[in-house]
Length: 257
Image (cartoon, rainbow, N blue to C red):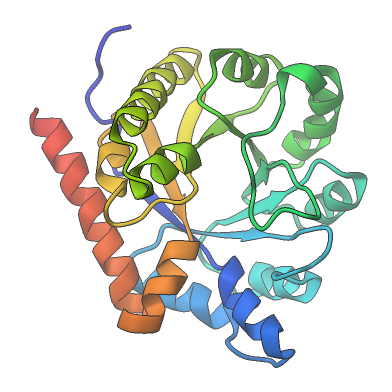
């Protein structure tokens, strides 16, 4: 595959799920995820991500209703491939729908969606979403088989799971980290060669974002938990602005290289 220059400005999608996690810990009305979404826009976010889980552990149905009414940025609606979630997405028609695996017992999304094994079912599932104008994204591992399957079922976008790369970095397993980063780099290029738009996310921090942001084929990063955590110490606005700065710096450096 021929190396490419960065394909344009790298977008930042800010996931506001864990603002709702803090709110729900006390069963109160605050902190308000919609206020967080507005602050994220002011700080330089290009989109807002919200994951409505089956057990409603953080984002609620009312949050989705309010986000659709209040947002001027595109909403990326993360959801499991269930009939309940499909019905909600078809009712609201968000800008993007990202299909993710979901287990009740998991703390956060673990691994990518198994597209190759459920190819026929997922193809039928995403068709009505695409028909109403939602850009359908599939959250997957950096695996050629899964990318090929996502392409065959008609997804417009894939989002590569960066969690393993970030975990290896945090654990000091640098050889494994570098190998996973190389897989992410190669699969970003492969997905782009198929005509898929490439996004990435999960677990990214200030320490890990720049190598991924430098991939020329990646058009969007979705980051949430780390930013909400940093907001406790810095405030949400400066936390997002610093992430935006690092992403832009990595993009500029990759364009010169």
